[in-house]
Amino acid sequence: MGCSQSLYETSNTNCIFFFKTNLLSIKMEANESIRNFISCVKELSEKLGDIGEKVSNTDLVTITFNGLVQDYQICVSSLSARGKPLTFDELTGILL
Image (cartoon, rainbow, N blue to C red; front, side):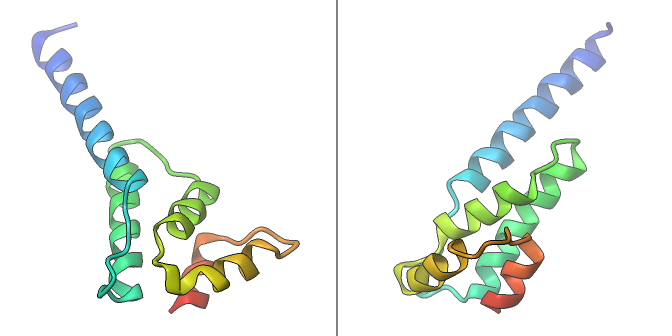
């Protein structure tokens, strides 16, 4: 294992840590549009995918639900009670 390979692996691990931490802690701001919030979630997920760290559909739905402002909690409760699990695409379609 050469130095450049080791450096790349460390860099990739740091990128995964950075993007995953940001994704897991993402919160919608009170004055932020739902479109912008969803765009941020997608962007972080895609960046993780680009470096080989796939984010599951279930995780994306959960992260989105947890990041929504209080105004959306009735919607979250209703959608969570569905018998069939939501996909992230279905959730974004409903929210938009």
